[in-house]
Length: 153
Image (cartoon, rainbow, N blue to C red; front, top):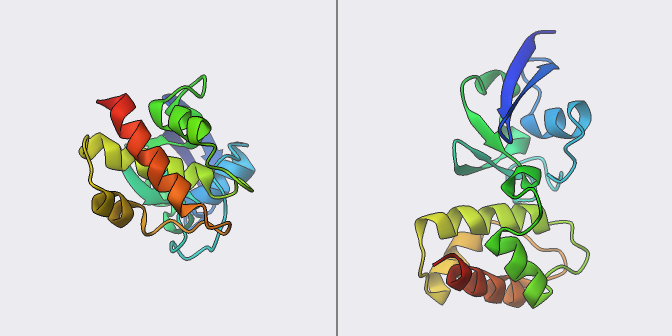
């Protein structure tokens, strides 16, 4: 198996994996970064969202062999102390129920708010549309994104 040097959360990490191994499994199984979740395996639910060079990306479909010279950020790297404004808004609004989708929701919301500092309700819904919440906490997610936008402006 080939060796790869990945730039994850500001650190270089070496892994040995088959070229077609999805980043999700490298993160979880090889590097013990388990905040990124497996939801569907077909890039449709958003639970596995990470940043690749600052762009929200579904890690379940991103092969490790394509990740040379990119910066990867997981939920663990969003904030060392869990005090990113989106994380703070999530806590303030008490968004999580089961919590399973929350890392992907937070990563998607943060990427969106980095690009749109003052979103409308429709823009929030459109940005978060691809992230599935099994507990149907969509109203609280939307409210938390609004609160986070104010914290980030």
